[in-house]
Length: 350
Image (cartoon, rainbow, N blue to C red; front, side, top):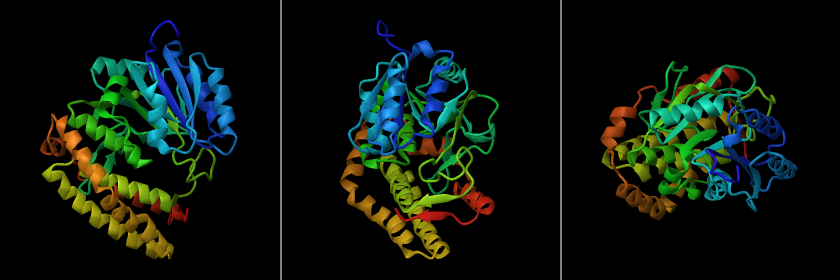
C-alpha cells in the first residue's frame, strides 16, 4: 500500500459512534478489494470514548490511519480535512453507522469506472434487513427539495447527487470543486456538491448491484438500535436542513432555479407553522424555521460569492438541470408517510 497509490481512500467521520464503528470497519476489512483501500478514520472530538476506539481500529487496519479533527467540525469540514491528505484516486465518504456487503466496493468502483462518471453511490439498504432505503438524490421536486427513488432501479441510473452516507467521487474532482462547503456544517451538503458537479459538466450514478446497509439518523434518532422505531428530529436538524437546502438553490441557481427558492421559502414557513401547532412549541417554528431563513440572509455574501465561483465553472444551465432532474412527486410526501407510520415526530429542543 505504501509503495503505490491506493485505488480508493475511505473517509469515515466519527462522532459518538461507539455502537457502530466495529461493524463498519469489520465490513471494510472483508471487502474483496481491501488491498486497494486506504482507510482514514477521523474523529470530531467524540465524548463516548469512540475516539480511542476509532484510533485503535485505524491502527489495526492495513493502510489505515487516524485523524483527530480537534473539535466538532460538523460533517463538511470534518470530512474535508482528512480528505485533503488522502492518497486514493477515488474518495468515499462513508458514515460510521453503515456496513457493506463484501463485494460492495468492487462493484461500486468497477461500475463507476466503466460508466466514465465522476461520482457514484451504492444501493443503500436498511441496517437490520434488505429493505430499500436510497439510491441517491433522484432530482428536485417543485419546491427544490431533493427527491428520492421509491424503489430500486434494475440498472445503473444517473442521479443528481449521491447521499452523504456513501458519497464516492474522484479525488481530483472533489478538490477542483472545493470539497464540501464548510459553512453548511451538516445537512444538504451532498446535494450542494452534487449540483456543483453536474453544473461543471460531471455526472453521478447510482449502482444497484453494489449494496450497503445504513442505520440513518443514529445520533438524532437512537431508539431501536439497528431498527428505527420512532420518528424523531431536533430543532438543530430542522435549522441546518432548511437553511442549507435554500442556500444550495441560491448558490447554484440562475434565474429559473431562484423560482424554486421562492417556493421553498413558502413551504418552509408553512411547514414550520404546522410543526409548531403539532408539537405545541413555538420555539420549533422560531429556531428551526424562521431563524434558518434569517441566517440565509445573514450569509448572503457567502452564497453570492459562491454563485459567482460556480458560474465560472458552469457548463450546464438551470434549464438543462430542471429538464433532466425536475420531479413532480413532492419530497415531503415521504415525510407524511413516515408520520402516518410512526406518528407525530418527537422534537428535541437541542
